[in-house]
Length: 329
Image (cartoon, rainbow, N blue to C red; front, side, top):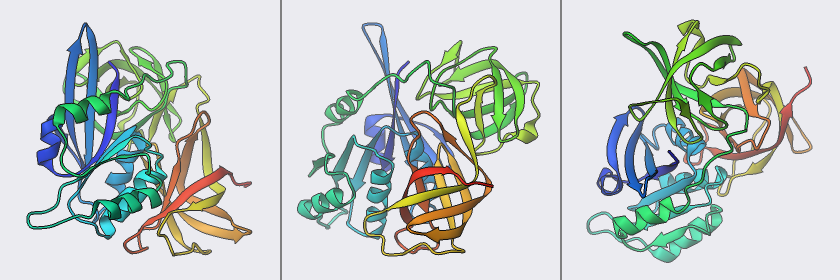
């Protein structure tokens, strides 16, 4: 079942016109499912909660999304950070929808300028809320299937024990496919388990694909090795590179005036990981950062590594790590 995950920043009212509300964590999900001529299409809206108070839910949503919808009630610093984050995540397909607060007004030309500066000039700007059917179809037209032959990568954001089922890890398939009875390697613990069963949207399935939010029931595995941000992959695979420390240059975010210095604490967001690190060295625009816990980066078509600094004020997105590589240890 092809799924398009859409990062959604806006009101619950707009979300409910597009899809049915699902589970709530620090991310709300809304799901629309249709079957036409035997073909299933699924639209999954992922709405981060508590932004701007918390940055991680927004970045987690952007880690798994392939498209975006931003409802604009007013132009302020929080909107600027949201749009810069979408640009940093390379969300090229998106819809910005002007929907002012009662009695308010938003200048469309000002929004166009901000979109352009944030790297989102190709987004569609709606000066009023569009027809929900047209918007839904515009989003679903970007639905693509992932490469089934890629090495498996499933970052985990929840886990728990289910009576009669056992240990279940839940996350998004970012690359490859997973099948029942597969041998599963958990990183960073480097411990093996077996996929006892799989569930996608409350349905038992034999196999799960890119874009799916999948529950993997695991046997022969200790619960202690699972945590938010850990990654499931195949035992025989070589999908990811471990970074205890990294070197990179920084493609600085628009509107960001702050400079990183030696000793600064930063966070790296990729594949639902939100790893804290400390800048050890700055030399000729190259940074060396030591991570508190290992950072895992896909070897094949790695997503952008977004660098954030939580004490940087209204613009916490510092930029995107370029040419990132494990530092010599």
